[in-house]
Length: 88
Image 1 (tube, rainbow, N blue to C red):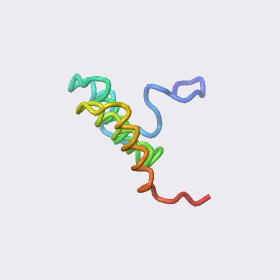
Image 2: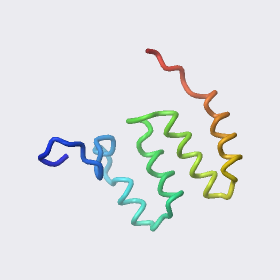
Image 3: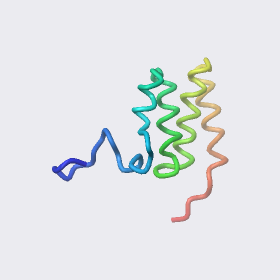
């Protein structure tokens, strides 16, 4: 965005179609870092990185409920097997 031609990091294009941006939702509910990242990654996954973004959301959700980082890494690595095949 803006007139510089640079991407608008505060309002990236993958959020433009939504009535409310993730940051507005996160702030309105006063969510912490982990919960906020769940919202961010779920909101953008269809326009951006698909399954990878869902795994990132899962990472932060598992952390929010108290899983250790070691266990989260195991779970999110295992979840890669469910990613749709990428056709190049």
